[in-house]
Length: 279
Length: 260
Ligand SMILES: Nc1ncnc2c1ncn2[C@@H]1O[C@H](COP(=O)(O)OP(=O)(O)OP(=O)(O)O)[C@@H](O)[C@H]1O
Ligand SMILES: [Mg+2]
Image 1 (cartoon, protein in one colour):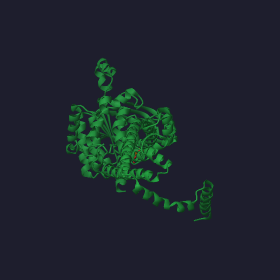
Image 2: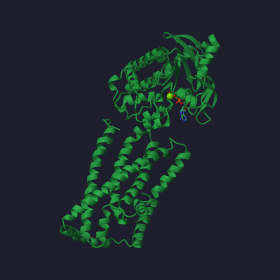
Image 3: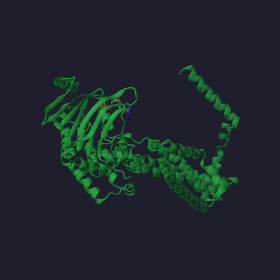
């Protein structure tokens, strides 16, 4: 976060509360991989700081693409995105330093298979390590302690020296979460992190994330296949269908509190997902 | 089998026969020459046993040359391979580096040896330089191909943290391509010992110097002793590298402990 922002907070006084509220803003964002077929169309989205935001949709609806727009790994074809008041773009030096604060857990996790659990999660600390020390793989005692503390948080403290290929699917997901948390993130993006797991393990992992979110006061944006799971854990849920956001709902204590959708009824939405899980 | 295939195979066989006649490669010469092996083997038993000591020391020199050449060559090749990888650099960097490596690879080691004999004079140093050049061209190419084959997922996930390129190399590229590199180093060391054994032919040191001189003076028995030492050494090195490979590379693939 830049200095100019904090000075604005001072001068704006009370209204700064509104100013600092939104962390992700999308205005009519469209995205395409081949500039012909649109994968995302006119997405409008506003995510407040501290929100537990879920994105739900069928396979191929554009969920992963949406996350990659938020962390600057991909640029929109049209429309405007602001993340922490900046346009996400990995080639932009200023945004790159905000990327340090975005924990990204991709759909395939992206762990280094031949490295240990501890080495993998310390990657999250690299932005705080000098070039020379990181070349020697040398981390300060503080970083190692902190990494171990986070390993404990995800219940992997006894697996620190294991290689990734020796872990179960659920354990690998915990490592990816830990790597993101070591970043001391402001935002965590998690792409279908529990989709392939059984219900019990899925809930264990979601609980770990929910706890981290509460204690670290971060904004989480998670992609799910399962609407039920999203309703259970999120404050707000957006539904994406064929690249369009068709619905956004607020949730409190597992109950839908505000339902905003022009074209679909609540029942149609629920059917859309119950049909899929029967398939 | 269709007729077109038959025709192609027939043409290839005809080509081999025709070209053999052209280059004077007559199988009858081979059969007639076979008894010469017996003469050579008999001559081995007649040579003075002190010759084995000389052969041993010259083989040791050969191994040392190959070892230095391999270590220095790999050390130079590694940064070049990082610069030549398309997934880490833009084309203004990787195209010139690739062109340089391709140029280095056009020469076999024996031609490099001749060049270095002209530059630094006769002796093992010229041979070491030749081995370095060959190793650089060869390992850098194999290694940049291995780097380009590194899984895109961890590259992507770690880039998304906004780390520097050197950090990306140290924490993703090197660990993910290390087992390739190890297997290439073992291979090139083995190969370099065999190559170094012939560099003496052009005066660039090593055991080949003795072999070529004994052959020049028709002392085939003595030459055979030196060739035998090369054979045994290469077999031993081969056996050792198979053991190392089993211990480090195969285990890492099966999911056992490996230190990188
Ligand atoms: N790198 C790419 N190049 C071209 N097309 C792509 C690329 N990545 C995704 N797509 C296409 O974009 C569309 C949306 O993909 P995306 O990965 O965002 O979907 P998703 O909602 O995450 O699906 P899933 O639930 O299966 O992960 C798909 O039609 C996909 O084929
Ligand atoms: Mg996806």
